[in-house]
Length: 116
Length: 111
Image (cartoon, helix red, strand yellow):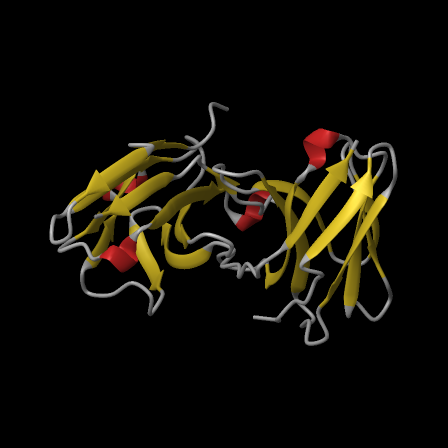
């Protein structure tokens, strides 16, 4: 178990640019989640995948945001035309399926986005 | 999803037992109670999960009364490294596990 990894760890971009983050979940986990966290707040749910299927998206995920998980392995989160309000920590988590009896989510270290 | 209420912050001296209580009056029959710990600039880390009564693992205990409208996370003999934000979450563990984090409890351990 090598844990959830995220790249890059930090990203600084100018307003209006597009950015893409990558998440590599724990290998046997079929569930993957994206969260956004701003200073002093708890993580906010953005979207969820079971294998390659994106099953739910938060209303926080505007049309500038898109997430994919091709082949049910790694996932990418893209933000188009970034705005200063997008500055936050973007967290990825993964978990096993319910039938395994273990339901906790394992989080990665996050990608900190700063939009200038 | 059931809403949770927990203290914004707590202070404790090193070596003491810390109890953080979370209220979840609207908890549903299928909801589990889960606690996470988060250090600055890191992702949350799972601590413990339970449905009823008491659950204990190597780092904490979770006490859940019969009505399940609250729960208490107990950290024995805290050290400075336990300074972190602790989140109480309530959710249905069937299907996918969408969870809602509140603002958490910021625990400060004092030497």
